[in-house]
Length: 336
Image (cartoon, rainbow, N blue to C red; front, side, top):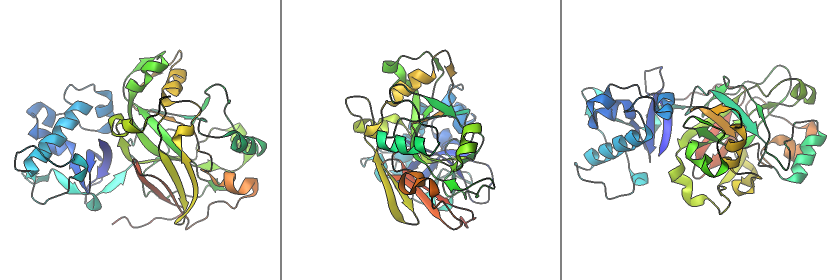
């Protein structure tokens, strides 16, 4: 499934849904198709990931999606793959729409409230690592997983404008992240994949000032989105070492400037989770970032003199399987 957080027209509070083609199923509104208990439950993303309500689980969400598809098909099982599902008018309970066209809602970060944000450095080759190290920036160990914490309260979603910082120039950072879906501590690497609720595109924003980078964490902000894709959706892209083979692309003002395949990660997400959980409890809603990909930031292309991002620029991180994460720089675009 492609889980989303969205704000319907004329509303201000984010709701949780599932994206199917050009449609978004509102899980809270459509839960009544499954059971009265599910309809009365809180359907925010964090509750869904935690599974601390018996009716609010990934499995129940899948049941709701199937129920909607069946109703739209005249209460018969849908013959077409779910990815070919399209919106049709008129499916409501009372005055509440169960299905909305994706073009009529505002997508926000799929996990608007992250519990923690750990940034590894596993998706960089040695020449790029040497360049970043020479410029004075943090580079993880080549032989062991290592991470730094980032500001988990400064989360942006797709199409959210990114303000230029006052304290230095701004750079982007294309990455892939995973979201933890169950509580775990001292997790063995070969069991760690079971703790992943889904994968998400990441843009890790960084102030390009090596002195500040040494003295403070990466706290300028992180963009997540547009969807949280459950592991079953990308399982077919896994290689024999447990790494996902997904191609990430970085575009600046419509021009591709970087591309990287996640199969090049020095460590799999299972290994990263195992390392992060040593003597530490991971919780649903924790986010682990695999690291800024080789070629995924302006530093990799232009060196430590820039040029850096300016007002009016548009940065896009995209992956065919995970969506398109667009970020306008220093401006506010009309969303509707």
